[in-house]
Length: 236
Image (cartoon, rainbow, N blue to C red):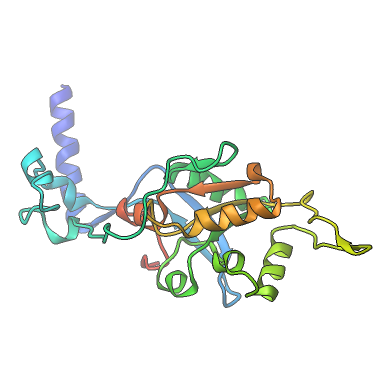
């Protein structure tokens, strides 16, 4: 009985795959966010899979043949990335900073919909952000905090956005920043080899930003795209 049921489900899946090549996995969320040009956009964030890939008879030789991926694997099932750049980051960059994977990112994005004290920050330079990013992420280039004596106005505006109150003169000295209303921020950049978000986080810690208020998506865009997650390039 079970075998017949399984066979029936496989047949249905095969027919479905022919007419509906994309499937959204169970872990998906619906969000709305404001784009840089001021438009409110609604999107489903999910792992998009091409069902035809599930019919490819993968085996160890095809998957680990050193070519990654084998010529026998259809083009629509392949994802290619440059991985020879940058410097590898540790799994945990600070004792008080949580390292996130894709599911934790989804949970954060979902909570952020109802919590204005949460921000999702793409810390890469602007051209990277414009090329492709994760929906609902805002662009705050890491250089605002790592290049001294530059981006003074941008740095000030960013700190205000982060809920940080500026310094006030106390005699001849300046009082430290007020982080009592600091927002909870999730940072990411290009991948485990990218130092842009770690540098930004380190610079904020140096200013006094509470480490516990910062989260880090270590896998970044490379990991996000490699598993087929929705991006600003995904057809809506």
